[in-house]
Length: 361
Image 1 (spheres, rainbow, N blue to C red):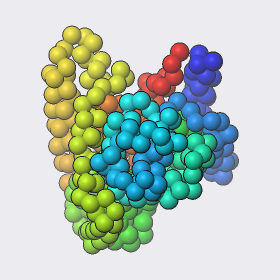
Image 2: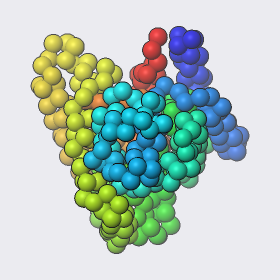
Image 3: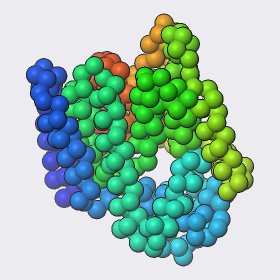
């Protein structure tokens, strides 16, 4: 069935690419494009958890804190082998403490209580939240874009995003929904609320911290100001709650995150380079240096008034040694929101490249 699944997903992706191209040329009714996007992103909710056990890992981390009154930043799932969630956790994560920010871990506790001891309920909760976040992302990208119908299509019609969020329940949609919301509210002049959005996004998962300096430089260049008080206030509240609940152990999330980044997936470009005979450390260093130079160029563009966040995220995906298909949500929606065609092309190409990842044919 894996081969059938891959073939059908490939057909869906070809239809998506052709459809998005037609939308760009023809500009059909916005509501029709949005309705198709909603159907596309919600359809995998009818399936069981697809291609990943990460949602069950979130469930286990939440139960460690909420049920066992332990610290998921200090105690991995393997410390509680009798927990109902433990058999569902991916083998690679059973001995790993949480790599997520305190905002996500705080949210995972009540979700774990709602799910109770049901793996199906846990999967459905995280799948539903990811699907809602994806719809918010598509909506916000369209609101920010000068081509709203095309933004709805290029983000909302993407079957890779649908499979891994409404299908897989990954939490990467949470921080990027917050980033896009921050960009949207900043346009309406609510800069402090935008700053709070950036803080919450980074405290769910650390990736937005890579993009934030570009946004800060752009704001300074345009002399529009940035919501520093909102950023600091939201960060202070979440970190205070996280410290009250987990002590300073939440900072330990950076340690397993570093260890995670040192792993490689077969689809990561540094790994592809090592397959050509380049030593592993040299390959990592080359891609890190290339991204560093690209980031300096992006800072220069931001200083001139254009923070190309989607392109920055896309180039980051090319450089990191651990690349997953659902990471496409880091780049494609931001590129659509910014009407950045090179970044959009990169996001679509990455979607095609990662299409078969996690499908064991």
